[in-house]
Image: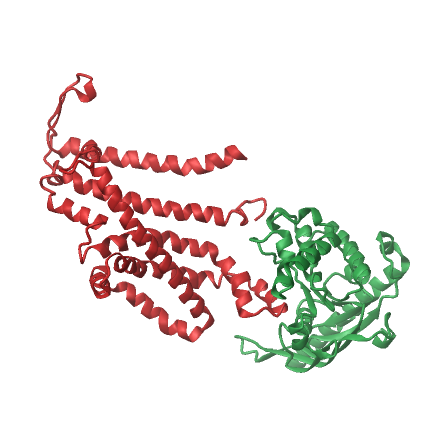
Length: 285
Length: 296
């Protein structure tokens, strides 16, 4: 574990600064009261970084992403994006969002889908067309501009969603398990494509995943989270060369980092089990 | 592909015709069993003479109450005192009725959709207004029609308003459902673009509502025709189908076929506008995802 300041890209200006963020939901039924989804989150993401949030389900990684994107608000703490509040950043259209499902509009063509955020932003028709086509070219789908989403494979649909997110030139790209629904081979290809896009655009990316291999392969930093209550348990710098390829997955360094992330996750799991055992023994004893 | 789509459009048509023929056969079978005596000299010039006395006497199957199918068909070619055929007269009446129905349908759809758009944005208003809208439809249209038509002191416009009254309801209900039928994740996406409520309406809610809206339109279109005919009744407007139906009723014992001909024209009109809406739906939604196991 290293301190965040030593992370690659250190010295660049921070794009996201999260300080003391907590989020509690009032649980329905079971008389459970409130569920602590996140407690005491501090995290800083610098310009051009690729940060992955990883953890078991229920660790609040998606909630944290949604808080950064101002799709939900924290119970306490502050989120600053580009020196502004998260809600200001959303109104300024600083975000590009990609979800697990592509969420494309069936009634629009591929091109029309990529133009959607630009239409909302009232970009001129000419500019809109050009930027949409540029970004479709970036995800290598320029030839499918006139198709409708349901005519495309799952991987292609997700690439359209990425092009749509990039069309607005976002200061930060928020991705919530974007490849989670894809098969392993498509996913690995998409990982390479995403790195290519990241390389070309230099966009700051925050990426939620539950795949250790994916997190290590893509990121400059991996943030390991643990559940009950959701918190950051480790931040691991991925000091692999920035140029990554299929060969990266066979480097010793890659294996070591995968192991490091896995142990950080497992350590949390063990502690969690221990904690519950203590609680149970406490009750019975 | 082309062969498939032709088959796809023909199949329901074949089904419809089969059912229609079956109904007409049942009709004639009833007459054969319990109607009046069948007598025809040299059917269609073949020299064959039909003479059949049905075994039973069913009171509803007499030639006055249930004319032969061919008698109704023949009625369309009959000439009146001014030398116009029944077909031409009914067609002219149908055009008048159809025009008012179309105006009513357009007005009613616009009001229904507009109302639903307001209601989905103001939840409180929805709870207050929807019961009233439902109540409005429990009042018999026969009671409301004179109030509207005579109250408005306008002929065809009052009729169109009665038609509107019947049309807006199914459209409102369908739109209320449809405007909420968007993918919630898509709403989240629009929020991440900081989209205004107007942009969300235009780019997400309305397009997602279209299949629901068309279901409403399918119900509303024949209702608009009914509303138009009922609207003509109170002030007995001369130009529409209502007048022809009333005439048919008045002369029923002399010329039962005339009423049946008017009924046929009215229902053809209803089916026609329904098919028009269905056709429009197929065209508008032609790019929607097909229900196809390969993509579902």
